[in-house]
Image 1 (spheres, rainbow, N blue to C red):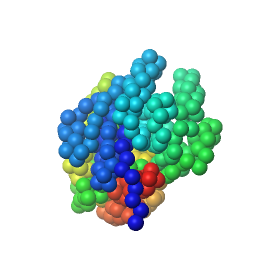
Image 2 (cartoon, one colour):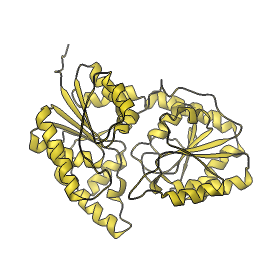
Image 3 (tube, rainbow, N blue to C red):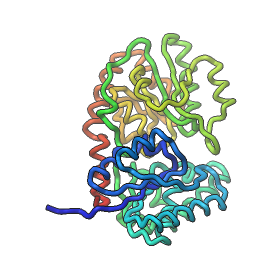
Image 4 (cartoon, rainbow, N blue to C red):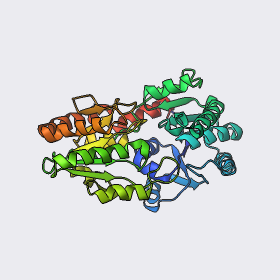
Length: 375
C-alpha cells in the first residue's frame, strides 16, 4: 500500500464566498486525508469561516483589491502573501483566480514554496481587446502570467479553449495543463426536484456583470413577455462594482419595465432553483459555469451561450439549448421552445441530472485534482 506524506496546503483565493460556493468539497476531502489546510482570504464571512473551522480548516487574511489596478495595493498583496508563506512554511500553494495566481506564484518563488498549483477559472477581461484599456490590460496580464506561471507544477484549466488561448498568447504550458470540469457540483446537496410547468419560470443566476449576458436576458424577457404574459423571468445574483459591472441605475431601469424580477443575492440558491422551470446563462465566456451544474443537478433544463465552458456541460437538444452569444433574439427563441413545448422541461431536466451525477460530481473532481497534486 502506498502511503502519501501529510502536507500543509495553503489555499489562496480572492474572497471568502469562493470557498463556500466552489472549493468546500475539495477542502473537506483534503482534511479527510489528514492534510493541514490553511485558507488565505482577503475578507471574512463568519458563518462560512465557523463552518470550515469546525472541520479543522484554518484561516489567515491578506489585503486584496480584487478589481483595482493600483500597483501599490498589488505590491502590498504580494508582500503579505510572501510573509505568510514564509511564516507558515506551507508544502503546497493552491491558488485560484487571476490575482491570487499571479501574486501567489511570485510570492512562492521568493518564499521558497516548492510546489505550486494554479487554477484558471476563466479568462475575463485579460483576454478581451475591444478597447484600448482592455488591450493594455491584456498585455499586462499576459506578461505577468508569463513571468509567474513557470513556478507551477500543474495548471488546472476548466475547458480546453482557455488552455488554447494561453498557448496562443505565448504562455508555455510545457505539459503542465490539467483539465477538470470546474469544481463540479454536490449532487447530494443539489438534489433532484420535481419539474415546474405552471407558470413556466426562467431564472438567470449570475453576478450582475455585462459579460454574464444580463442585457441579452433582459431583452429576451422583454420580447417573450408580450406573447407569454403568464411566464416569469427572474434574475438572481449580487451586484458588482468596478469594470464590467451593471450599474444600479441601469438595473433599476430594467426593473421598472416590469418584465424581470430581481431577487438580489441569496446564501442558498436551491429554493429558487426548485421554483424554476429553466435556468438561463447567456454568458460571453465561462471557465465552467457552476450555476448551470447546480441547475442540472436539481433536474433543471438550461439555455446557455454556445461558448467555451457552457458547451462543455450542455448537449444541444439533450439537456438544454445552445444559442449564439450576445444575441438577445436567438436567446429568446431558445427560451421560447420551452413555452411552446413544456414537455421539454422534464425531459431535458432529467437528462441534466443524469449528466451532473455521472460526469460532474464534485467528490469525483476533488479526488481527481488531489491525485494530480499527490494528495
